[in-house]
Structures are given as structure tokens and as C-alpha cells.
Image (cartoon, rainbow over the protein chains, first blue to last red):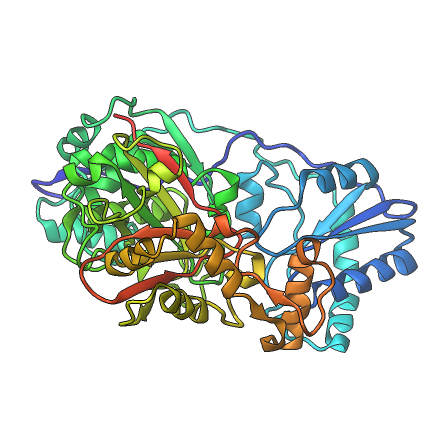
Length: 96
Length: 406
């Protein structure tokens, strides 16, 4: 660089603030697993199949399924609370 | 996207299983096969011990970095192009002097974080807003408008998260009301959604640069738009407050006429509605017949569609004794769409989304475009002519209006 000048970088770094460590499970046997169906096509079937497989093959005791009203809207707080109260782990998905 | 979102929301070690795209078009058997192949991975991830994530080293400062560059404008644009810092158009170099001039147009502190913008949750400091405003070519007097616009996109009901990341052609339309529109020389008249007005063009561009550079909605990465749309470069206008027969938008929203506001809309484009009729009922019939479309996100979600009425059409409706609220009610009632137009998969999808509102669908169900008439937006803008414009919305969004402060 020669007789240059300085300009500002306009980009903000992605947020990298305080991170919380998730809880890990020692196994799925006897656990309650929640699903948030993202309301995209086919996701309800994937939830049904995974739920059945987790119970039959991995010893999951119970599955709680909840469906979002639409793909582009968040899960209501009450549903989040319900899943948080009942489940040892919650699975959701993104994409088409 | 999942990893970036998890990081932004404070769970960088969220376990993620990846499945191939496309998923939505798989057969029922295909979904079953996929589930069988995924379940062991999911079970393993759920039990995976927590990684020793670098737990939170918040940035010591959000002060933007200075970068050395050659003196020539070509050098600046070569740098910005190579770094992916522009919308694809040349920019004005954000030098210290220019950014300082922009900052002097607001009383807000340069380090203040106005918002964290998804999907990257970068910090929209006043300084970064100023930097992107310089790049877009804004006059310093635009700064208060941009700060208010950044504040306006953040409430959950606007759903900027989805606007920034969806496969739909969603963008943010900026509407400015009140005295500042005139002070800035904004256009709410002829060609108000078109080119050449400096304030309209640069304000809209600046907001979209902010969403790109601070929100980090980079196309192909976290911005997953299938096609996008031209309004992702700039989409901004004023209302034609001198020619509207009704109260202007900001007064309708509860502000005084002498206040200035910015309104953000989650928009999907524009569609011309040209009718030469001078009859109010016929104008409403034309508009109401234009809105129903089977792939519409407004009908899918119960949305927030906007009608930009030309002054000519607005005056005909007003002369027939109609208020804005009555126009909304008439359009809401007359534009209901038969579910018979929907392919079965979309019928099921919309039933899922709108079932709580409308009950179980039959083949005779009629879908309203919005959950309530009031969610239809009306703006009077444009010049002489027999055209009004439909601005479809993303559906899962509600416009937000914010007052512009110094």
C-alpha cells in the first residue's frame, strides 16, 4: 500500500458472546424426547419415524410431539416451556 | 445456518445432524429410509459429551476496524468487492471523515448498540450504521431515519429473522412519513418506487447494506433466497401526504402529523393494478380480484398485504364516502380465496397454519388474505395515473412504525 488512506470495515462479526453449555445425556434409555415439527412438507413423517425408532431401538420411554403453526413463525413460549418441563432432549429441524 | 444460529443464540455446541437436500419432495418411503439412516447419528449426538467450547469471549469493543487501502476509488471498490462487503454495486469509501460527518447528524453515541440483527446477530452500533450509510451514498441527514429503521426491524412481529434467511423473495420496504420526508427531498409522487431520487435510493440501499453486513445475511450462506428480488438492493419511498384524501400512514398509526416516522414492511415485490374506471366499487373489485394467488404467502399465513393507491384511485374511493378502514374491510371481504385453487399439499399446509383461526377446512372454505382487515396496509403514493400497486408480504410478518428522533 502506498499513499493510501484508511476506510472502515463495515462488517459486524457474528455474535460470539457468552455461550451456555448444553446438558449431555448418558444414554437415551428411559428418557423423554421432544420434537418440534417445523411444519415443512414431510417433517411430520420424519418426526413420526424418528420417534418410533428412538423408542423401539434406543429405549426412549416417551416422545412429545409439537408442531409449529408455520415454518416462518417461532414456537409459542408456552410450548417451549412445556417441552422444557417434560423433556430430557428436544429435536427440531431446519430446511426444505 | 444452524451452526451460526446456535452460536448467535449462545449454544455453540448444539449437536446437529445433517441430511441431504431436497427433503420436502421425498416419498413417504424415502422419508422412512432417511429416518432409519439418521436415527443412530441423532441418538449418538444427543449423548455426545459437551465440547469444550470457547465459552464466551465477548468482543472487547464493537468499534469498527480501519483498513488501509489505496487512494483511488477503484482501489476501495476492489477491496470491498473482494471482501464481499457490498451489495454488488460500487460504494462510497467509508473514510473517517465521512463517517464522522454522518455521526454528527445524530445525538446517539457511536458505540451504542441499536440492535443485534439476525441471522448473525452482529451488533448494529451507531457507528456501523453510519459506515454503511456512507457506503450507500446517504446524506448525513438520513442518519436518524436509519437508526429508527434499524429499531423498527427488531420487534419479533416483524420477523426479520425469516425475512433475512427465507427461500422466499422477501425484503424490507421502508416508508417515511412526516416532515423529514420533505426535508430529505424524498419522493412519494411520480415513480416513487422507481429510480433517481437520491434519498429514496440511498436510504433503502443503506438499510439493506446494514442487513447484509451487520445481520450477515449473505446470499448463498445464511440468506437462502431462491431468486431474491430487485428490492433487496433498495426499496424505499415516502407517502404522498399532500395528495392523500385520508390521514397519512403515521397519523393512522397514532403519531402526530408533525412527527416523522419510518415504517418497515416485509415485502415480496410489486404488482401493477391498472384500471381506468372512475367507480369506487369497480376499483375495489379490480384490486380484490388481483390479490388471490395460490402460492401467496399472505393467504398461507394470514398476512400483511399492502396496497399502494394512486392519488387518483384514493380520491375516487374517498369521494364515494369510504374511509381507509372501510376500504380495508371491503378488500378483506371481497378478496377471499377458495381453497379449491390449492394443490393438496398446500391445502394441508395452509390448514395447519390457519386451522386455529379458521377451523377445519372443507372444499368450500374461503381464505381471507389477512387474519383481520386491519392487517391490510394502505399507502397513498405515486403521481397521476390509473395505477395502484399490490405489495405482497412474506405473510409471517407485521409492519412496524417507529418515530424518528434526532
